[in-house]
Length: 332
Image (cartoon, rainbow, N blue to C red; front, side, top):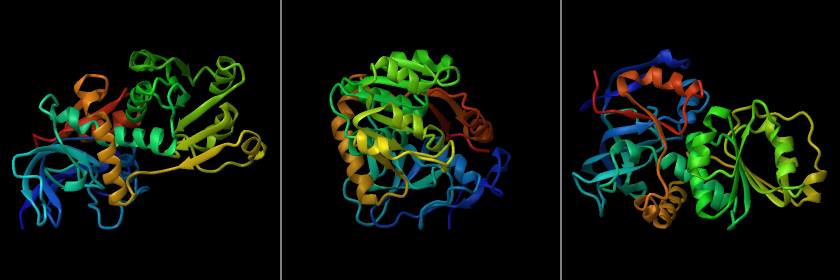
């Protein structure tokens, strides 16, 4: 069997456990595309998997990487609308940190000629996550009030832009030096979570009426203040538990008094049909917005694949504003 180079993990742990080695090149099965990867991008899930805290779904590659852009080199049985040489990008359950990766035809999107591979690789995970959170789970309506935590993250910068298209009034939380980009993307009010209490800011800004929707990644440490910040029929969508998973005490009275809804969700372990429908709806509704410049991937830095450990350290240190992308065209 053919071999390829990939970023592998010696043992679960820190970035120093990442190394470039040889592994078997995957063969495309029914409905799958074998893609020569030109670029991939980092996600918090990659860090958690590297640490041994987030195993891939059953049947998925154990190589890190949830999104790619590249060129089709082989189409598997039953592939109907893709061919060798097509430029594609899309979401995958694993395997992106490699020379070649498998992308299911139902999750593949055609890379527009005005996109570089780095731009395309910076879109799938964060924009699909943000779209799912705002529209499928959060049911965001025109001109509603929304708070997006981690507003300068990859998902955050995508969510700000998507919410702006709905003419939403957008609050974000982020460190102060990241506020300018969030304002440029469409944030109405930027909150420095290191020096301000976001719940107090929301209460003051909304004159006690609260918000319609909150998108959160911290979970436990923000839960009580998120509830305080929501208004009548408010919705809270939690996408991660970066701050912790356990809450010692929780008062349920506000849930009933304000008729609150709380949803928690991941995307990676969703059925492929769900991911396919999400991908199709997102691109159908927003391809033109990308072409017009109303949406764009926010890329902080592009690292070479040989710098993968440095890239992980950079993301873990929260230095990024937007996406950290890996160019995979130059291996050892």
